[in-house]
Length: 120
Image (cartoon, rainbow, N blue to C red; front, side, top):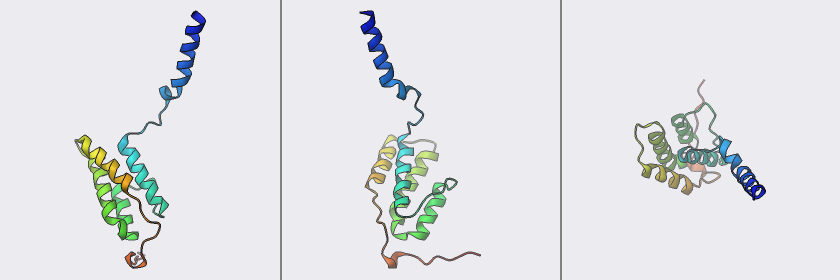
């Protein structure tokens, strides 16, 4: 009986051990924004580690104006949730939904690219 109980405790410990000490659990808002950034990277727009959401949006507007509207909505929601004083739960689910539905195309139509000015 004692051996069976010990075996059960050991099995449960090893089953849940990784979760007890895991630091990889992300908040749904962080997960949604990470997925958005990953999808932007698949179309050639990578967010640098030191780039905040507002500056990332500027980059998107400059390089892929065809994605501007959707990116603006997603980033606005992210900023409101992440940096606002209060966050209603419906905004978190709205952000997750918008990001899940966001499927940027690899390349925009040639006429939708803006000419990029080079600042000296």
